Image (cartoon, rainbow, N blue to C red; front, side, top):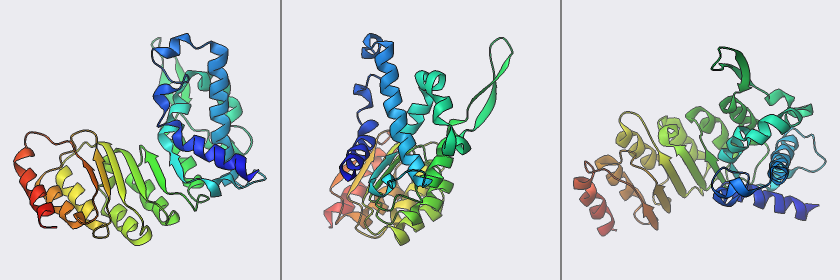
Length: 267
């Protein structure tokens, strides 16, 4: 039984990372996948998530959540957004103990008729609230996370090492960095896909500075998030630990790159 749980946890960890190869996602190869095969894939996908959630509600014989080291909430979003899931599986998924997570919002069709659609953001937040209370060995979380969610969840996951954020806006609240500093001594890796808003350089530098000195080993920024002088100076506080740095900068930030180089040349 324990072996099967570890395999499931491994699959959960890698679902989103390999999403471009999976026939349950849209794309060129997806056109060739038979409908029955696609439905079976989505069913297995939903069973995996349902098992994790149900175990957090203590509705399973075995506590699967205690063996999970990574949770990708973007993967859960992708499941909830999948057409096969919405049409064929959602009713069964949100049944029994999981009925409490069924949340919807009213939308309007082109003909003016109103209909219920899944409130995916609320569903993911509600599931994350429960699951993070039963995943003590969690080392990595990722997704479209919010500041308020991270502030609540981080104290529950002291083994957290990696954070992958679709939006860096989640780091604006200073309590996020403070909570990681206080509760997660092994935190060392951050990935941000994008970040919108004002004073991004200032907010990002505050977060970097709030971490324990010389603990950040990996930082990857996919798109320009406004990192500039303040951030480059703050990264100096991790010059002895930082091993991998991939950061996207704008033309406005280029003149300040010498600050970053200067921080590391003195280490």
